[in-house]
Amino acid sequence: MDWPLAFAAFTLLAFGLSAIYSVALSQPESDFLNVKKQLFATAIALALFLFAARGNYRLLRNWSTVLYGAGVLMLVAVLVLGTDVRGTSGWFDLGPLRFQPVEYMKFALAVALAAYFSTRRSRFAVREMLESGALAAVPAFLVMLQPDLGSALLLLAQWVVLSLFAGMRVRHLVPLVAGTAIMAFVAWHGLLADYQKARVMSFIDPASDPLGQGYNVQQAIIAIGSGGWFGRGLGFGSQSQLKFLPESQTDFIFAVIAEELGFLGVCVILSAFAVVSYRLFKVASGARDDFTSYLMVAFASVLVTQLSVNVGANLGLLPVTGVTLPLVSYGGSSLLFTLLMLGVAQSAAIHARRTDLT
Image (cartoon, rainbow, N blue to C red; front, side):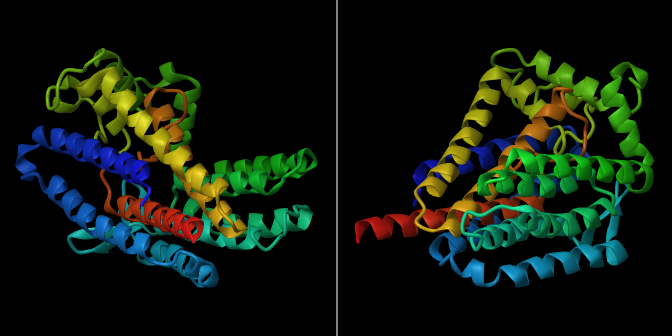
Protein backbone atom coordinates (compact mmCIF):
# COMPACT_ATOMS: atom_id res chain seq x y z
CA MET A 1 0.00 0.00 0.00
CA ASP A 2 0.89 3.64 -0.35
CA TRP A 3 1.40 4.22 3.37
CA PRO A 4 1.95 8.02 3.25
CA LEU A 5 -1.42 8.34 1.49
CA ALA A 6 -3.14 6.05 4.01
CA PHE A 7 -1.52 7.74 7.04
CA ALA A 8 -2.51 11.23 5.82
CA ALA A 9 -6.10 10.10 5.20
CA PHE A 10 -6.36 8.49 8.64
CA THR A 11 -4.94 11.67 10.22
CA LEU A 12 -7.75 13.68 8.62
CA LEU A 13 -10.29 11.12 9.85
CA ALA A 14 -8.95 11.41 13.39
CA PHE A 15 -9.09 15.21 13.34
CA GLY A 16 -12.62 15.12 11.95
CA LEU A 17 -13.92 12.70 14.59
CA SER A 18 -12.26 14.75 17.34
CA ALA A 19 -13.85 17.98 16.09
CA ILE A 20 -17.30 16.34 15.73
CA TYR A 21 -16.99 15.00 19.28
CA SER A 22 -16.01 18.47 20.50
CA VAL A 23 -19.09 20.03 18.87
CA ALA A 24 -21.27 17.31 20.42
CA LEU A 25 -20.07 18.35 23.89
CA SER A 26 -22.11 21.53 23.52
CA GLN A 27 -25.23 19.46 22.74
CA PRO A 28 -25.64 17.07 25.71
CA GLU A 29 -29.29 16.51 24.81
CA SER A 30 -28.23 14.77 21.57
CA ASP A 31 -26.60 11.84 23.43
CA PHE A 32 -23.66 12.10 20.98
CA LEU A 33 -25.89 10.78 18.19
CA ASN A 34 -23.90 12.47 15.42
CA VAL A 35 -20.65 11.05 16.81
CA LYS A 36 -22.15 7.55 16.78
CA LYS A 37 -23.44 8.01 13.23
CA GLN A 38 -20.05 9.25 12.04
CA LEU A 39 -18.27 6.32 13.71
CA PHE A 40 -20.69 3.92 12.01
CA ALA A 41 -20.11 5.61 8.65
CA THR A 42 -16.34 5.52 9.24
CA ALA A 43 -16.42 1.75 9.87
CA ILE A 44 -18.32 1.13 6.62
CA ALA A 45 -16.12 3.56 4.68
CA LEU A 46 -12.90 1.92 5.92
CA ALA A 47 -14.22 -1.49 4.90
CA LEU A 48 -15.01 -0.09 1.44
CA PHE A 49 -11.56 1.51 1.32
CA LEU A 50 -9.85 -1.84 1.99
CA PHE A 51 -12.12 -3.67 -0.46
CA ALA A 52 -11.32 -1.14 -3.23
CA ALA A 53 -7.60 -1.23 -2.42
CA ARG A 54 -7.50 -5.01 -2.84
CA GLY A 55 -9.61 -4.99 -6.03
CA ASN A 56 -8.75 -4.37 -9.66
CA TYR A 57 -9.52 -0.69 -10.25
CA ARG A 58 -9.18 -1.09 -14.05
CA LEU A 59 -12.60 -2.75 -14.12
CA LEU A 60 -14.09 0.68 -13.43
CA ARG A 61 -13.31 1.66 -17.01
CA ASN A 62 -15.59 -1.09 -18.34
CA TRP A 63 -18.39 -0.01 -15.99
CA SER A 64 -17.98 3.76 -16.43
CA THR A 65 -21.19 4.17 -18.47
CA VAL A 66 -23.24 2.17 -15.98
CA LEU A 67 -21.82 4.08 -13.01
CA TYR A 68 -22.48 7.41 -14.70
CA GLY A 69 -26.01 6.45 -15.75
CA ALA A 70 -26.85 5.25 -12.24
CA GLY A 71 -25.67 8.57 -10.84
CA VAL A 72 -27.82 10.59 -13.24
CA LEU A 73 -30.88 8.44 -12.44
CA MET A 74 -30.35 8.98 -8.70
CA LEU A 75 -30.05 12.74 -9.21
CA VAL A 76 -33.36 12.71 -11.10
CA ALA A 77 -35.01 10.51 -8.46
CA VAL A 78 -33.88 12.67 -5.55
CA LEU A 79 -35.65 15.68 -7.09
CA VAL A 80 -38.92 13.77 -6.78
CA LEU A 81 -38.37 11.52 -3.77
CA GLY A 82 -35.68 13.41 -1.87
CA THR A 83 -35.91 14.88 1.60
CA ASP A 84 -35.62 18.63 2.09
CA VAL A 85 -32.68 19.63 4.31
CA ARG A 86 -32.06 23.36 4.81
CA GLY A 87 -33.86 24.21 1.57
CA THR A 88 -32.12 21.59 -0.57
CA SER A 89 -33.80 18.38 -1.72
CA GLY A 90 -30.60 16.41 -2.16
CA TRP A 91 -30.95 13.50 0.28
CA PHE A 92 -32.69 10.14 0.29
CA ASP A 93 -34.12 9.47 3.74
CA LEU A 94 -33.24 5.89 4.76
CA GLY A 95 -34.66 5.94 8.26
CA PRO A 96 -31.84 6.64 10.73
CA LEU A 97 -29.47 7.46 7.86
CA ARG A 98 -29.49 9.76 4.83
CA PHE A 99 -27.81 9.26 1.48
CA GLN A 100 -26.69 12.16 -0.73
CA PRO A 101 -26.41 10.97 -4.36
CA VAL A 102 -24.28 13.91 -5.49
CA GLU A 103 -21.41 12.45 -3.45
CA TYR A 104 -21.70 9.26 -5.50
CA MET A 105 -21.85 11.39 -8.66
CA LYS A 106 -18.47 12.97 -7.89
CA PHE A 107 -16.95 9.49 -8.00
CA ALA A 108 -18.96 8.33 -11.03
CA LEU A 109 -18.18 11.48 -13.03
CA ALA A 110 -14.47 11.08 -12.31
CA VAL A 111 -14.58 7.54 -13.69
CA ALA A 112 -16.66 8.57 -16.73
CA LEU A 113 -14.42 11.51 -17.64
CA ALA A 114 -11.26 9.44 -17.15
CA ALA A 115 -12.67 6.71 -19.42
CA TYR A 116 -13.68 9.29 -22.05
CA PHE A 117 -10.40 11.21 -22.15
CA SER A 118 -8.31 8.02 -22.13
CA THR A 119 -9.77 7.16 -25.56
CA ARG A 120 -8.92 10.51 -27.13
CA ARG A 121 -5.23 9.75 -27.71
CA SER A 122 -4.07 13.13 -26.34
CA ARG A 123 -6.32 14.97 -28.81
CA PHE A 124 -8.47 17.85 -27.58
CA ALA A 125 -10.62 19.81 -30.00
CA VAL A 126 -14.05 21.44 -29.97
CA ARG A 127 -15.76 18.07 -30.28
CA GLU A 128 -13.98 16.74 -27.21
CA MET A 129 -14.79 19.90 -25.29
CA LEU A 130 -18.51 19.64 -26.11
CA GLU A 131 -18.81 15.90 -25.49
CA SER A 132 -16.89 15.88 -22.23
CA GLY A 133 -18.57 19.11 -21.15
CA ALA A 134 -21.98 17.49 -21.64
CA LEU A 135 -20.94 14.63 -19.34
CA ALA A 136 -20.36 17.17 -16.56
CA ALA A 137 -23.15 19.61 -17.46
CA VAL A 138 -26.00 17.07 -17.16
CA PRO A 139 -25.38 16.11 -13.50
CA ALA A 140 -24.37 19.68 -12.63
CA PHE A 141 -27.71 20.96 -13.98
CA LEU A 142 -29.63 18.33 -12.01
CA VAL A 143 -27.76 19.27 -8.84
CA MET A 144 -28.53 22.94 -9.45
CA LEU A 145 -32.23 22.06 -9.51
CA GLN A 146 -32.03 20.82 -5.89
CA PRO A 147 -30.65 23.62 -5.57
CA ASP A 148 -27.03 22.92 -4.53
CA LEU A 149 -24.69 25.47 -6.05
CA GLY A 150 -21.54 24.28 -4.30
CA SER A 151 -21.77 20.64 -5.42
CA ALA A 152 -22.67 21.67 -8.98
CA LEU A 153 -19.54 23.82 -9.17
CA LEU A 154 -17.44 20.91 -7.88
CA LEU A 155 -18.69 18.68 -10.70
CA LEU A 156 -17.86 21.36 -13.27
CA ALA A 157 -14.45 21.92 -11.66
CA GLN A 158 -13.64 18.23 -12.25
CA TRP A 159 -14.28 18.70 -15.94
CA VAL A 160 -12.23 21.91 -16.16
CA VAL A 161 -9.19 20.31 -14.46
CA LEU A 162 -9.32 17.16 -16.59
CA SER A 163 -9.82 19.22 -19.76
CA LEU A 164 -6.69 21.23 -18.97
CA PHE A 165 -4.85 17.99 -18.26
CA ALA A 166 -6.12 16.58 -21.59
CA GLY A 167 -4.72 19.51 -23.55
CA MET A 168 -7.27 22.32 -23.60
CA ARG A 169 -5.81 25.29 -25.52
CA VAL A 170 -6.21 29.01 -24.99
CA ARG A 171 -8.55 29.20 -28.01
CA HIS A 172 -10.94 26.86 -26.22
CA LEU A 173 -11.27 29.26 -23.31
CA VAL A 174 -13.38 31.77 -25.28
CA PRO A 175 -16.43 29.51 -25.73
CA LEU A 176 -15.85 28.16 -22.22
CA VAL A 177 -15.98 31.63 -20.65
CA ALA A 178 -19.01 32.53 -22.77
CA GLY A 179 -20.79 29.32 -21.74
CA THR A 180 -19.97 29.95 -18.10
CA ALA A 181 -21.40 33.46 -18.30
CA ILE A 182 -24.62 32.15 -19.86
CA MET A 183 -24.94 29.42 -17.24
CA ALA A 184 -24.33 31.93 -14.44
CA PHE A 185 -27.05 34.21 -15.85
CA VAL A 186 -29.55 31.34 -16.14
CA ALA A 187 -28.68 30.05 -12.67
CA TRP A 188 -29.06 33.48 -11.06
CA HIS A 189 -32.44 34.17 -12.63
CA GLY A 190 -33.93 30.69 -12.65
CA LEU A 191 -32.15 28.14 -10.45
CA LEU A 192 -30.64 29.74 -7.37
CA ALA A 193 -32.78 30.06 -4.26
CA ASP A 194 -33.14 33.44 -2.54
CA TYR A 195 -30.86 32.42 0.34
CA GLN A 196 -28.12 31.41 -2.12
CA LYS A 197 -28.33 34.78 -3.86
CA ALA A 198 -28.17 36.43 -0.44
CA ARG A 199 -24.97 34.50 0.34
CA VAL A 200 -23.32 35.75 -2.84
CA MET A 201 -24.39 39.34 -2.16
CA SER A 202 -23.19 39.05 1.42
CA PHE A 203 -19.81 37.85 0.15
CA ILE A 204 -19.54 40.85 -2.17
CA ASP A 205 -20.53 43.24 0.65
CA PRO A 206 -20.01 41.54 4.07
CA ALA A 207 -21.36 44.56 5.94
CA SER A 208 -24.70 44.44 4.12
CA ASP A 209 -26.21 41.75 6.38
CA PRO A 210 -23.92 41.09 9.39
CA LEU A 211 -26.68 39.49 11.47
CA GLY A 212 -28.16 37.49 8.58
CA GLN A 213 -26.28 35.82 5.73
CA GLY A 214 -22.97 37.40 6.81
CA TYR A 215 -23.29 36.11 10.39
CA ASN A 216 -21.82 32.64 9.79
CA VAL A 217 -18.68 33.94 8.12
CA GLN A 218 -18.12 36.62 10.76
CA GLN A 219 -18.33 34.02 13.53
CA ALA A 220 -16.01 31.68 11.62
CA ILE A 221 -13.41 34.42 11.23
CA ILE A 222 -13.65 35.23 14.96
CA ALA A 223 -13.19 31.55 15.81
CA ILE A 224 -10.17 31.16 13.53
CA GLY A 225 -8.55 34.33 14.84
CA SER A 226 -9.05 33.42 18.50
CA GLY A 227 -7.29 30.07 18.16
CA GLY A 228 -3.80 31.54 18.27
CA TRP A 229 -0.82 29.24 17.87
CA PHE A 230 -1.98 26.23 19.89
CA GLY A 231 -5.73 26.76 20.27
CA ARG A 232 -8.04 26.88 23.26
CA GLY A 233 -8.13 23.13 23.65
CA LEU A 234 -10.51 20.46 22.39
CA GLY A 235 -13.98 21.23 23.72
CA PHE A 236 -13.06 24.71 24.94
CA GLY A 237 -13.76 26.82 21.85
CA SER A 238 -16.11 29.64 22.79
CA GLN A 239 -17.64 30.09 19.34
CA SER A 240 -18.53 26.43 18.85
CA GLN A 241 -19.28 25.48 22.46
CA LEU A 242 -21.54 28.49 23.03
CA LYS A 243 -23.25 27.85 19.68
CA PHE A 244 -22.27 31.16 18.11
CA LEU A 245 -20.97 29.26 15.07
CA PRO A 246 -23.79 27.66 13.01
CA GLU A 247 -23.20 24.44 11.04
CA SER A 248 -20.06 23.93 13.10
CA GLN A 249 -19.70 20.22 12.35
CA THR A 250 -20.21 20.50 8.60
CA ASP A 251 -19.57 23.73 6.67
CA PHE A 252 -17.49 25.40 9.40
CA ILE A 253 -15.62 22.52 11.00
CA PHE A 254 -12.37 24.12 9.80
CA ALA A 255 -13.12 27.10 12.05
CA VAL A 256 -13.75 24.74 14.98
CA ILE A 257 -10.37 23.06 14.48
CA ALA A 258 -8.61 26.42 14.09
CA GLU A 259 -10.15 27.74 17.32
CA GLU A 260 -9.58 24.65 19.45
CA LEU A 261 -6.29 23.32 18.00
CA GLY A 262 -4.86 26.59 16.74
CA PHE A 263 -2.46 27.32 13.94
CA LEU A 264 -0.61 24.08 14.68
CA GLY A 265 -3.76 22.02 14.13
CA VAL A 266 -4.51 23.88 10.90
CA CYS A 267 -0.98 23.17 9.67
CA VAL A 268 -1.42 19.46 10.36
CA ILE A 269 -4.75 19.43 8.48
CA LEU A 270 -3.37 21.28 5.46
CA SER A 271 -0.19 19.17 5.46
CA ALA A 272 -2.26 15.98 5.45
CA PHE A 273 -4.27 17.25 2.47
CA ALA A 274 -1.02 18.19 0.73
CA VAL A 275 0.33 14.65 1.24
CA VAL A 276 -2.88 13.07 -0.10
CA SER A 277 -2.85 15.33 -3.17
CA TYR A 278 0.86 14.77 -3.80
CA ARG A 279 0.51 10.98 -3.57
CA LEU A 280 -2.44 11.04 -6.00
CA PHE A 281 -0.42 13.05 -8.52
CA LYS A 282 2.53 10.73 -7.89
CA VAL A 283 0.41 7.72 -8.85
CA ALA A 284 -0.89 9.66 -11.88
CA SER A 285 2.60 10.57 -13.09
CA GLY A 286 3.86 7.00 -12.73
CA ALA A 287 0.86 5.35 -14.37
CA ARG A 288 1.41 3.21 -17.44
CA ASP A 289 -1.99 3.96 -19.00
CA ASP A 290 -4.02 7.11 -19.61
CA PHE A 291 -7.10 5.94 -17.72
CA THR A 292 -5.17 5.68 -14.45
CA SER A 293 -3.57 9.10 -14.93
CA TYR A 294 -6.88 10.83 -15.65
CA LEU A 295 -8.63 9.04 -12.79
CA MET A 296 -6.03 10.04 -10.20
CA VAL A 297 -6.06 13.66 -11.42
CA ALA A 298 -9.87 13.67 -11.19
CA PHE A 299 -9.78 12.40 -7.60
CA ALA A 300 -7.15 14.99 -6.67
CA SER A 301 -9.21 17.76 -8.27
CA VAL A 302 -12.25 16.78 -6.18
CA LEU A 303 -10.31 16.91 -2.92
CA VAL A 304 -8.32 20.07 -3.67
CA THR A 305 -11.36 21.96 -4.96
CA GLN A 306 -13.48 21.01 -1.94
CA LEU A 307 -10.65 21.96 0.41
CA SER A 308 -10.16 25.32 -1.30
CA VAL A 309 -13.87 26.20 -1.38
CA ASN A 310 -14.49 25.15 2.23
CA VAL A 311 -11.44 26.90 3.70
CA GLY A 312 -12.02 29.94 1.49
CA ALA A 313 -15.59 30.23 2.79
CA ASN A 314 -14.41 29.90 6.41
CA LEU A 315 -11.92 32.72 5.85
CA GLY A 316 -14.41 34.93 4.01
CA LEU A 317 -12.44 34.66 0.77
CA LEU A 318 -15.20 32.77 -1.10
CA PRO A 319 -18.99 32.68 -0.82
CA VAL A 320 -20.52 30.07 1.49
CA THR A 321 -21.92 27.33 -0.78
CA GLY A 322 -22.39 24.45 1.67
CA VAL A 323 -19.28 22.55 0.58
CA THR A 324 -17.89 20.42 3.39
CA LEU A 325 -14.29 19.51 4.23
CA PRO A 326 -13.48 16.02 2.87
CA LEU A 327 -12.77 13.32 5.50
CA VAL A 328 -13.19 15.90 8.27
CA SER A 329 -16.75 17.28 8.17
CA TYR A 330 -19.73 15.35 9.48
CA GLY A 331 -21.51 13.40 6.74
CA GLY A 332 -21.57 9.71 5.92
CA SER A 333 -22.10 10.00 2.14
CA SER A 334 -19.10 12.28 1.64
CA LEU A 335 -16.91 10.11 3.86
CA LEU A 336 -17.97 6.92 2.09
CA PHE A 337 -17.15 8.03 -1.44
CA THR A 338 -14.04 10.00 -0.51
CA LEU A 339 -12.53 6.87 1.04
CA LEU A 340 -13.72 4.89 -1.99
CA MET A 341 -11.70 7.25 -4.19
CA LEU A 342 -8.65 6.82 -1.99
CA GLY A 343 -9.16 3.04 -1.97
CA VAL A 344 -9.14 3.04 -5.77
CA ALA A 345 -5.98 5.15 -5.66
CA GLN A 346 -4.41 2.56 -3.35
CA SER A 347 -5.35 -0.15 -5.82
CA ALA A 348 -3.64 1.80 -8.61
CA ALA A 349 -0.52 2.24 -6.46
CA ILE A 350 -0.44 -1.45 -5.55
CA HIS A 351 -0.82 -2.57 -9.18
CA ALA A 352 1.91 -0.14 -10.28
CA ARG A 353 4.33 -1.53 -7.69
CA ARG A 354 3.52 -5.12 -8.62
CA THR A 355 4.22 -4.26 -12.26
CA ASP A 356 7.54 -2.67 -11.32
CA LEU A 357 8.53 -5.76 -9.33
CA THR A 358 7.81 -8.06 -12.25
